[in-house]
Length: 296
Image (cartoon, rainbow, N blue to C red; front, top):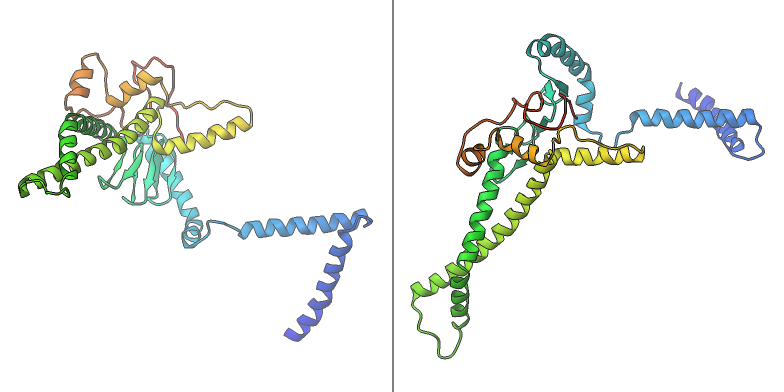
């Protein structure tokens, strides 16, 4: 049976190759050239259906469970979301649960995080809607503390560093073991505070810029791609969560009145952020006119 199929397929392949060879020439009849072009186009389309640069076991599982995702998504939208009035964008394919606007799935925590900014390995936790303000306050005041320690101990650092340089002189200085440990500890602590002040200060400035724009770290990459895509079409990108620099900071810090700059910003406060993280209606004191929106 296989021998008979090979005898039949061999001449067919030879004829197909001859037709393709003739169709690639300039003096080929238009009908034959059209058939060859359609054949090649169909071959490319067929290969594109099975090609995926990100292919793997996860892709195959997601493709197999796509009907289940669709069913769960529609059932929750019509049955659950309508009752709870939760604005959703899509369904998370990891949690199989509605994903509200500005929500992203953290592969490390294995859960969806409201208004996710990033996963902090130093805190072993995600920075999102309910703890973003605490994270920024920690970075800001930690930077101020390191700058204060570095500036205040500059004279002690210079004296300790000068003393260490005299250790190998002849005759050696008469420093006790405790004094030597103190000199080295002062130098080490000054370099440690200065390094943390530079690194953490750069991170604080970066997050301050994002807060001023009304973005998170993840949304910055998404908005940058969207801005380039719209610029290529001659359109202007607008971030619907950007209410202006001052209003963005008031919204982020939870400042409603003038005294809140003292009681909620400079002093420790456990007040909750604005909104529930599900929908993003602007507060009544926001000056910029905006409606409830949804984003990717």
